[in-house]
Length: 268
Image (tube, rainbow, N blue to C red; front, side, top):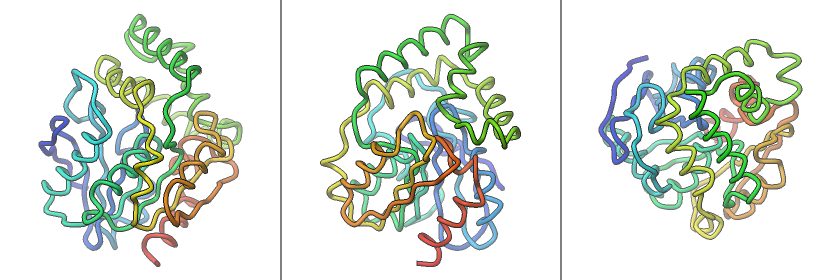
């Protein structure tokens, strides 16, 4: 995989790209980087052009110094495609990435093929979530990062009982990723994606590309009914509820998610 940075509306974005064929862009969750999609890159990287995004303010991408809108993120996807010389791409996103995939599909129908949107929502944050994430950010700022008990809280938000019991390598991966988070930069993203998150249900009614919305049966961040409500806002959207996974489905069970991507995106 080749690594490079591309100028976008939200600063220089690091992408890892490789392979030839139909392009698939992968955008991860908050606090994660493109490395979250290693299982998908390994599966699809020979027959497709894979683009793994470090989202704004994360990993090797330029640090953030202000909040942003979801339309800014959708434009960021367009900037990445333009920077790579890609006219049209399929889109796979998790959580933040799933929300942005919906925005991108609604705003730029000529640039997207099919979309798989996982562990996400179209609804604004409720009062409880705004308060919880506000406390998370304040605590992380005091600690200088995601440390100690705060790590355990984020792990519980991201992973479910099946992964804690049966997938210690996934727990270790997420724990290590959290240690690398630049909290000053990522706090702007968290603020934009959680307390300032827009209600996208009306916008998603304009989506015409084929979309698969995926929920994790053990997802504590966006429970199944909330994710299925997002699907209901997208005309003709297909749905899948995955047993034994929580908020990071593609990382927790790559074999299962890869089968979904193959069936819905590549074999359609």
